[in-house]
Length: 302
Image 1 (tube, rainbow, N blue to C red):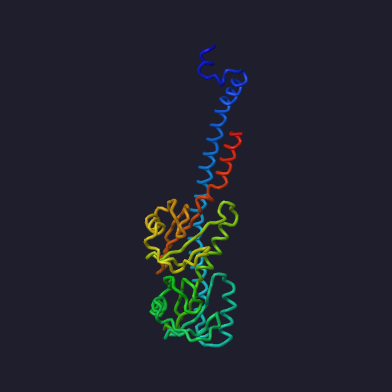
Image 2 (spheres, helix red, strand yellow; image 1 turned 60 degrees about the vertical axis):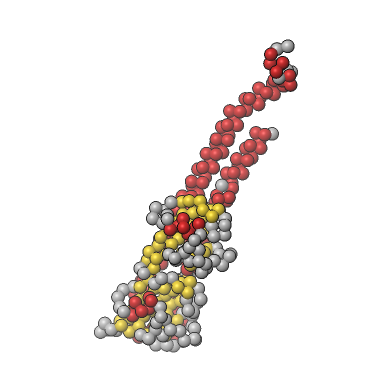
């Protein structure tokens, strides 16, 4: 009896040895397949994470474009103050028709020197006074376009970004203010969908706008109604405020306790200063490549 047979009697037969040789020959193949699967996982993750950073940049640009378009509109409206500072159903209807051309607007309106809303695209019949709003006070003080801090609209009851411009008379006196309100929820949902629509790997991406104090302005999508949530001490916000300048992507637990990869940014527009986070669930990020990896191991096991 050979020494091999003495210590490994179960492999003494030729058949057993052939099986062993076949298994040994599969080891290099298995290593190559496992390495390929892991490398594919790494590359897929990098691509998806880069897409998150791209979406953050695109949404930032969307905000700048929206502010520019609103500024152009307000500048045009401000040229005819007599048309917009006289309350009438026709004035309201004209603003309503104009508002329909801008999907993210919740309102276009005019305000007199006392802060009373004169004309509004919402055709609201309730008397509304906006003199307590900082952006209205600043606009009535004169100057150029005012982009205010996000606030809950008195008419829409939605979180909006207000933009305002003074009306001037022919002699240069301030007559009132013309303003628009960008509905942040509509804006974020629309732009998030448009930027992630063509990517299968970004089906469940979420985006959140924050106040600098950690208050959630809006989240898209928002099945948990997180608007107004104070989350300053959350892991997500603490990570956000530490990484807005370098735009790093990091894995953090979201407000719903789901681990996600996030990209961050800070958006400063006029008087407004808001923060943005865009995240994708870690499980979904690697779901496809992990499935391939486990299928590979299953084939080798068989």
